[in-house]
Amino acid sequence: MQTYLEDRLDIADLMTGWIHRDLSDWKRLRELFHPDGTIELTWFEGKFSDFVDGSMRMGVSDLRTKHVITAPLVTINGNKAIAETNAITVAENVSLGLGASSHGRFYDLVEKRNGAWKIVRRQCIYDMGSFNFPRGVVEIDAEIIQRYPREYAPLAYVLEKSGFPVERVFATKGSDLEKTIKANGQNWLAL
Image (cartoon, rainbow, N blue to C red; front, side, top):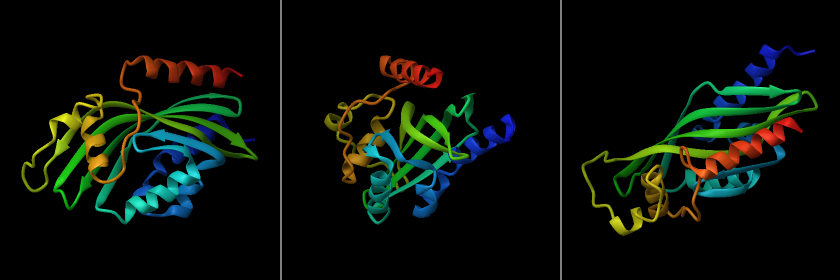
């Protein structure tokens, strides 16, 4: 029987396994989620397998991304867990000379099935963001930037300009949507 510490380490490995996306290791990235797993973040909502396919398309575009992932805060109840993990996304469109840094948190529902912890559902909560100008300041379209919440507006802007539009409003720090996500997560964990 696996110990509580081993379970926590397995879940932490899932969170830091996001490096497989940055390394274009699509096979290992797919292994982080259960087959029915879903993901919701700025440019994608749906099945995780479809997200990986979209990430592959993004990987050959002018948009480059890098993620910095911290150790998760994990709450375990039997074969279910919630992991909340700080994440920094750095994005750059190399042809536009424009980038963004976004600070947020992955809010993951994680489940142990057949002896293996994997993610069932990932949602992102955005805390703050800023633009990066790797080759000098470029003009930003103020009308476009105003369409998005301040916390992830720079990232959404770079995504949109790169052909990966943001279709709806996502959770931000302290928002009602964040509270709903967390309440739903706690209800799921208690079942």
